[in-house]
Image (cartoon, rainbow, N blue to C red):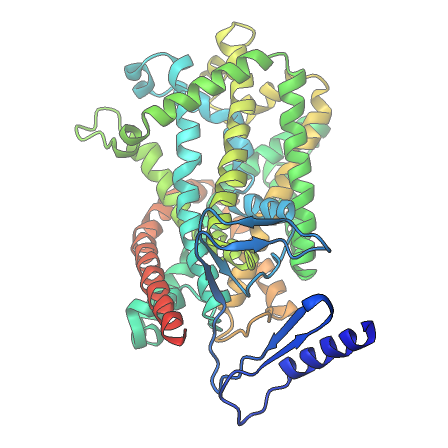
Length: 514
């Protein structure tokens, strides 16, 4: 009987896998074996490509894990939409996926601002109008770096994921995501303008992030080794080292990027754990962090809509608006990369995972690193605000903060390595996106040629190096980000609207075929 059952299984499988070009109907084979065991095989014989790669599972559907002899079974409480094939396993394990998502979305800036941003707010006159440093200095970093920027990223990531994995679009460009609205104009001058804006935003974001945090890496190297060379030379060496790391990982494909992201995450959370447990401010860090988080959530709407109409402080123009612009220019590379690596994930998993890894890790970073130094400030153990006001050197102040930690030289090395890893993973995503832009079409699963990737790796590092010789230009480049953000903001709205329109159309197509 076992032999018969095996032959029945084989026959059913062969029949289901056989498709004749002239067949236009589905073929089903049913086999009844021992103990009323029923085996069913069915082919999908459509004369045209159905492109049914967006799978919508309704709530109340019985599901199972489909792993092993006795998989877990359950009835779904919520519906789900999968970017990929039905029951397709995610392209990357959960941790590796989350690590790449977080590290590509935030460059080394997160470490620079986690250490120092509360000081910049504490010295702003607007904070004195609102209350004490203790009450508000830790709130604004959480507000500027958490829910809104990752909201930008994840909405676009879902749209790009739908475009790549569901609609199977082979033009991996910003303009292609606007096709449901632009139609044939996507191939004309409106599409070209959108793509030019995207490339401009890529370059602006690249140069801006390097101009902000690279001097900190130079300050750490100078403090560690007291080298007899200029800061510009040190910064150039750092850029070349970073370029080598991210070029090496990118040329090894997503596997190389994943490994680098994992290393970055281990260094990052290792640093946070050390500061939290051995910095001597554990209680203050936890309690102030919870208070700041609660204040941010409670005042989220007011903080988001404050525009200072009388221009008494210019605080929203200096900080909030600049940050929104900064995140928008980064919306060209980061969401495209997140959407690319999210194949096999549901829309819900992509959004919740992004908020879990992205927002969660960001909040922990600012709470731990920021509140450590703020705790020392408010308890009188150190005066970092006075140091900053006296020297106007934010990078030197951060070095002084790190020097208060146990084993300071080792911590400096860890911070330096973590920043290099952050930069490398971030620029992997930028270089990959730019490489895709170099092709008119890329089929599913096809990656840009390694020479094209190498070219973009080199080009992306040349602009920051050139700007090192013009410090004023590097500062003014932040204004360029704001300029670039306005048209990009319009495109972001178009992409979101296009996704909603195309997803609705796709569901209607599926319903008609059923």
